Each structure stands twice: as C-alpha cells, then as structure tokens.
Amino acid sequence: MAIFSVYVVNKAGGLIYQLDHYAPRAETEKTFSFPLELVLRPHDEHVLVSFGQRDGIRGIKFVVLADPRQSGIDSLLRKIYEIYSDFALKNPFYSLEMPIRCELFDQNLKLALEVAEKAGPFGPGL
Image (tube, rainbow, N blue to C red; front, side, top):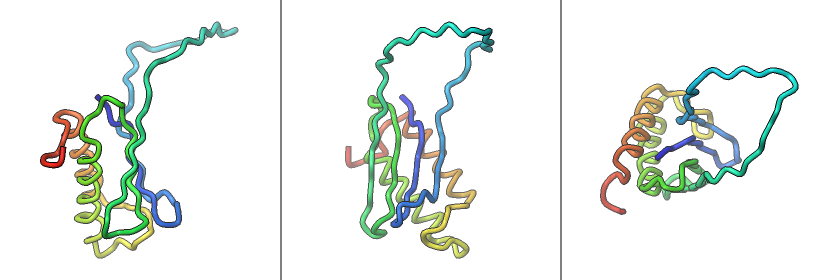
C-alpha cells in the first residue's frame, strides 16, 4: 500500500504544507535515443483522494493522496490533525494561516505515514 502525498490547505485555499511521501524507485537507469518510440497503454492504478476537516479549526483542510487499497485513511486524517495541533498550533513561533515550518511536525507526520502504511488503522474507529 502507499500514501503518496499529504497537503494542508488554509481557510483562504492557500497551500500551507506539502509532503511528497512516495517516490517510486527506478529499477534501472533509462536512456533515450531520438526519435523516441512511445507506446501508450492504459494503466489500471487509481489514486484515491481523501479529504478531511476536523472540528476545532474551521477551514483548515487535510488532504491525503493514497492508493485505493490503503486502509485507515480516516484514522490517518485524525492522527494528522492531532500532530498539527500538537506541533504546529502549540508552537509559539507559528502563526495561523502561515506555512508550517516545524521539524517536529515533519518528523511525526513521516512516522505516522510509515505506521499507516505498515499497520493500517491507528486504533479505534475502524
């Protein structure tokens, strides 16, 4: 399973945080010669977009792009809100509606994404 990206959007619709979590690994180095011979084939992988807004901070939206087979997205959104509350809102140097620049927020969010990918749900609720 994979979680591709996490976005936090403020009330005005501005992106205040972005994390690109999943980067596919190249198996081999690819080189191209011209003219390129391209063959297009349909690809059956879809990306599920999950939106979340939690009570308490109206207007802040947490967006997770994940593989449709990934379980526990609602629990993950609750955990992201908890991390946002603990490490961004309680930071005396953070101003609401401004970009999130907090190392502890980054570290805990990455840890939560790893746990979500390995274990699925975060506990009660699913």
